[in-house]
Amino acid sequence: MYNMANFEARSPSDLLHFLTLKELTESMLQLYHLNCLVLIIPVSTSVERSFSALKRIKTHARNSTGQDHLGALALLPSPIHKERPTNGLRFHLATRSGWRRGGSEQRDASVQSDEES
Image (tube, rainbow, N blue to C red):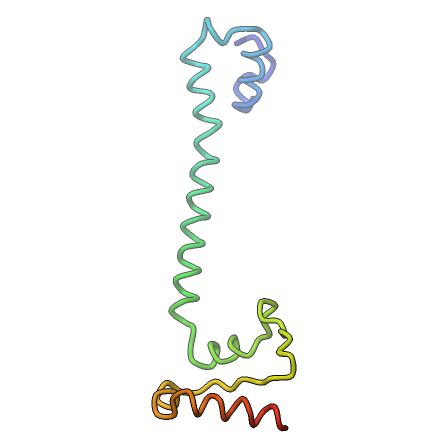
């Protein structure tokens, strides 16, 4: 292993490949485990770093959302809401106080006036 050309210039993945190819994983178990850790740790920290950056970006986006931006987002068309057939009837949304004051008579009158028009 130490007689490999440019041993010091080899990457950890090359060393792991050499250990596996020469079936030295059991005889050099500690070196094998250390090499596996060296290959795994940079990946895990880069993933954690990206999640941390994403958290900062989302926090900034939430905190910097102003009323103008929210109003513009509210005007965007939504694919969830689709036109539903109403069989020729239109129903008016009323305020809660209007429903309480008028009761069922007011609701019936608004449906009848829509049927006539």
